[in-house]
Image (cartoon, rainbow, N blue to C red; front, side, top):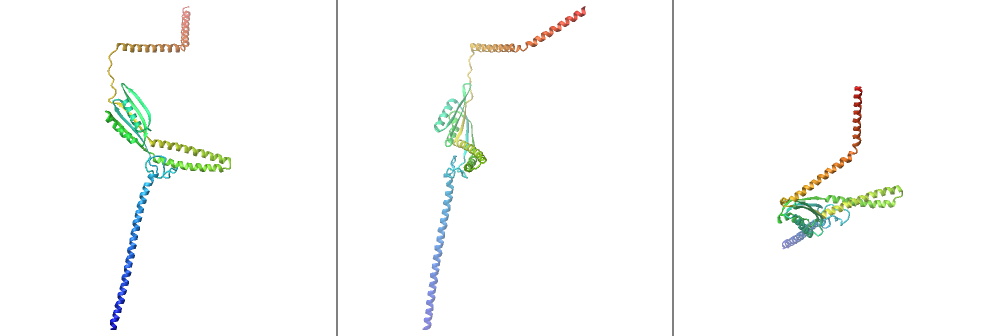
Length: 321
């Protein structure tokens, strides 16, 4: 009986120990699962955060940079230029040559269309060159950069749609981004030096120091003005593009034959005779004026001839006697 009770007690103790081990293993598995879940959530959060930062970093310069026009910078309009431009600064010019049946009417139509499409366009005027009964017309405009593609496309298809022919269309493009950024950097440095020199000017104690600082300050201010002028020129060239148009008549000029006119021929002959008479009279006047310089030479020659003849006559008289 005691053996049975002892075996039963041992069995109960073993079952209790096994239960505690199972409970501890369950708690350990639960802790590991929670830790793994938290680690997975943290990694997903970090990945999402990194993706958002790349997207934000890529879009930020486009909103605060130059954006293809001078004057803006990544520092919000300060003198310090951004290291990377969102868009390059380009200087473009377009040269178009085409033929037309009526070059003057075509020039008027093109000018009207360009000025209505771009009210801010600047016209440099028209140049008409007459060739017989027709005209060669050259014209140039400065159009806004934003409207330049529309102007280029219109001019490229204008001749074919109006009975003419597109002879040549040439576009030149120059990237001035580096030039603009470099000059912006130089301008910022020179303005810093200008402020430093102005501070030193107020602290100078001798006349020599004042003159030296003033001379350098004058040089710096002159360089600042030159760079500002250059940047203003770049701003104009990148804001307005040059468009040059050359119009020529289709097939060249054809002059109709004219009937023979005796009166016109007589008039032409009379005019030629008058011109010849004027030329001959002019020649005689020139000879008469310059003949005054020949009179002394002619008188000397005449006297020499007379003296030589007198000597010969005297010699022959002496031989006869």
